Length: 212
Ligand SMILES: NC(=O)c1ccc[n+]([C@@H]2O[C@H](COP(=O)([O-])OP(=O)(O)OC[C@H]3O[C@@H](n4cnc5c(N)ncnc54)[C@H](OP(=O)(O)O)[C@@H]3O)[C@@H](O)[C@H]2O)c1
Image (cartoon, rainbow, N blue to C red):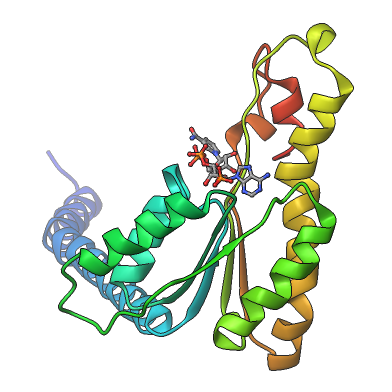
């Protein structure tokens, strides 16, 4: 014999189950839809921002920097490609010019060569960079060197070289470009780091100290 109260409770549970089973899918799809729309708007805004933006990429001759150059060029950014190897940068600009980009207007990149481990060269490079387009929207501090070796066998000169290139050089370049960004009240600075600054791996101490 089921009491009236129990029957009422059972009915309540059934109603709740029904509502949940009906509402869960629209709720889920609604959330996914809103998130996707947000991401799409964010992507469109970012694309619009990058178009015609002046983007400086250090270490553009190879690896990640070269790939960044391709992506930003295709998005319509005005690039200043930096590195030490002028020939490699010239080869990259030829490759970019030959690439077929139809969606947006592209811009011929400038090349500025300098050694990040040389403080004097950074000062000269900064004015050269600023002369290219007159201002900087985005600085991508990507250049860096890697090193593997036991601490005991690594000379202090090597430690210094890795630190100068991966840390002090980018810091000096950032400080040199900051006044122009502050003056325009506009600019973004990207620092390419490494997970090795967070976790320790054998034979990587000289390098791991630099992105931490
Ligand atoms: N590859 C990875 O797995 C990895 C993982 C985590 C983080 N990262 C970081 O990501 C960044 C790029 O790495 P990657 O693997 O693409 O490096 P990569 O292919 O070896 O390229 C390094 C770039 O830095 C430039 N560079 C090196 N020393 C320089 C100096 N003294 N002055 C000016 N430019 C200098 C090089 O250009 P020039 O030779 O023309 O000077 C080159 O374009 C680095 O900061 C690295 O620490 C890489």
